[in-house]
Image (tube, rainbow, N blue to C red; front, top):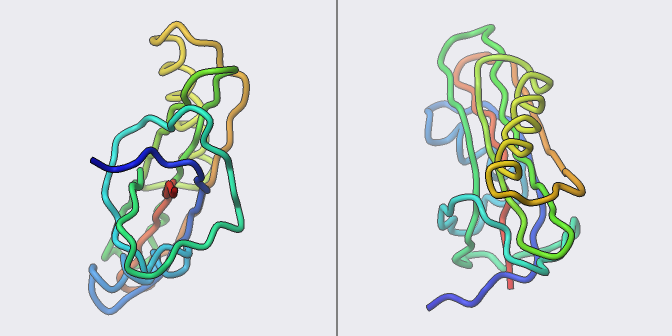
Length: 152
């Protein structure tokens, strides 16, 4: 059984690569999460988890992470990724991630709408939102990635 994460941060980054996998890896590196092992999780931020923008996670760690990404091989195409965290007053938070063909503004607006819907559906009051976005104009093979890694 994994312990419950106590810290998190939001990251969004874009990159190019010579293959789809290296474009993804380069975006992870640009987002400060390229040297950890992501364990993909869904959308709940544990109660009491604290935002730590300077968080450094040891290389090779197994890290619960909510993330979304898009990879494109179409030169000139604008791709985007965004992640957001909605906070309640005294309960857990909700994480949403989105990637699309379009701008960082498009992706960020979609995240905000999804967070509002998630809180309405749960009957919870949304008291704050934090969003990280990126977009990228593809040169050869590009990746846009947004993530919320959580740590202990």
